[in-house]
Length: 320
Image 1 (cartoon, rainbow, N blue to C red):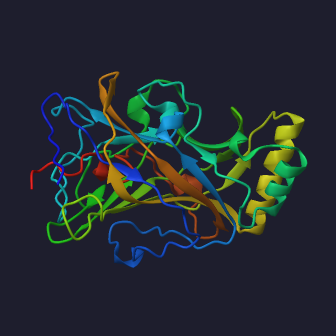
Image 2: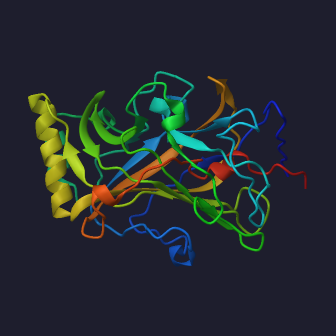
């Protein structure tokens, strides 16, 4: 069995989630057992599937301060079969990572075999627009303010995260200042849709053994509104309108959901004082009803994300 170590200078490797194709319904984990997270993944027949491959300069960036005494280090994992390492404290799309790789998106539309988005697909097809022109991004509105990315805030047990030595499940809620972050849909490098703010909800299931092969990880948001970006070109404007028509037919809101299984070992990238892990990011946009979503004025964004299954990032720190 593989082993990993965490030193004071963080010369370590990390576990990386390997995504399988997303189902429209999340049936691999009983979300009703969650205690801290109140939101739930939705079932929807109107969805788009995206994939963020680190080898293509995409994916989710999970990172933490390299100084264990500094803010932004992360709590210690305590769940059954977890390695007991620090949980990476920050998370954002690679397009806003402190690695500064030049990435422009987090994930790319996987193809036109799509459920329910008929207006959107027809517009793409009729105008000769390829699926890989469409991107999804999770980013910072101001460049280089990396500590404003989704993060674990005060990292308080029972508020920002919840776990137990007798349970294999850990729950994390990663937040940010809504004015500092954005979730968007893009056409090539042009943003065409802006989504509302949401925390990132992360569920980590460490499996029946300390090995990473039986791990399950879930990342999802609230159901959030979608709005067309102002000042678009004619072609991009029509694309945005087609997308919004399908969202309206699906209930008026969008939820982003990622589920991953098993792990591999990514290298650590060190830049701007952070240790960074580039994670693959299979993610689905699902149209859903907005009626259960609170008004924006009632959402208080502070700080947060350690990552999508970012536990897998430091998985297996103890020798077996």
